[in-house]
Length: 526
Image 1: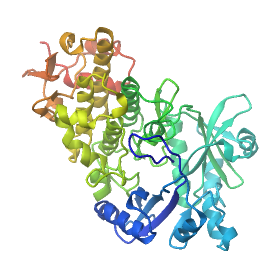
Image 2: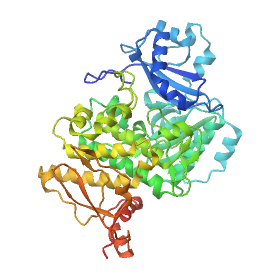
Image 3: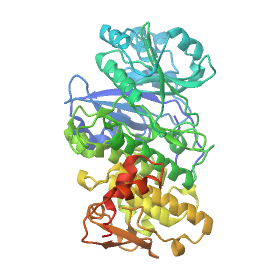
Image 4: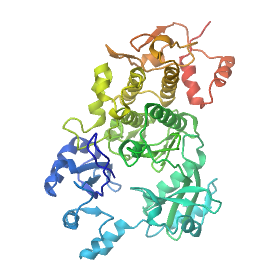
């Protein structure tokens, strides 16, 4: 991982990874993050800035307990062995740079935490794979060994709670990403099969493509297309930050593509899908910064039109989880919308969702950023300094307004992803016209009310963003000098005839969820 103060050169470090089990429910834990970081820092004789809370989930066997994942970050490139062993004696440690069992510790404990392959496979899992009839190809372990050079560590391109991801080359020369799952319990089996079944049914240009699977000799692998340019997280916060800076156009492209992927899951796939772990590390990038949403291991099928909640154990990543889901376990498609809003804030600010090294009051991105989304001075404070000063503030303002709506604590105040796509398409259109004419704020006109934006920001009065803007019959005619959309209401009913519907389909190659955004807001011309 990287650990550098803002504005300094990127520094790669080897953290100590600690897993803690707390005797409190997940929703109670969120208010105690700072206190926990202080306690841990004191207990292992470190600075609080060295304690990074990376994630938290409800315990599988007891939802009233919480599993917390923590990175202890060295002040230099790595910890010495003495410090590592001191921490090991106090907690369960996953630390790849030290052979703990060589220092007199239990090899069974340390080795099992360092092992990348599962130890065994359940009979029910094996029988499920035998019965699998999906479109994904079934690979043998021999093929996987050959593709990854026997899972050589030099081929590792990613790692997480699920296991490791290796770059591989198939016999036909196709480059792939091989995801090896390390969990071997029934929960791991369910997640694996869920991801296989889910990805077999999903086909969209902004979703990662599943090529095949492998289940043989206690090994479980998912074989994906290789998305070669790393993740959004690595470009904003990690190893690619200094070598491949994301300019504003690239960030807009990523925001729109990722929104299209989520809109497809929520509104166009059959059945509809809630991702449940949408975050910047699960947005993979092509060399031209086309985004692809990945990692469907926690995904769930939505109920009905997506307005009904699913009661489920809280899963996801700390900092991205919607408040209603964290507190009640009620999962909605708009829980994903909240997570998407956090990613938009990352794109705007360049900050991590949770960063315990920040000054007090700035650790949580949503809490810190929201007050700055309402005025020009606030936006200038908010914007990632690496973007420079030449970006159009009108474009920033509209994306900030969209982000503000997505992270609303009240579910009903958040948009659907199809509506977010429409708003971002308009921002991107305006951005391209700005680049061509350099007179964006004076000359741009919205014609025929074909695309409706929810993102309205008056730079003096703050964002004008209400649910009524999405539900009332309305159109936005011109963009005034302040950057706000003027809204004109009509008492006519919303109505879209077949001829108009066909004409709309010809305007864009987007998914039907994008056209639904148009249909919802078009005004009856009769």
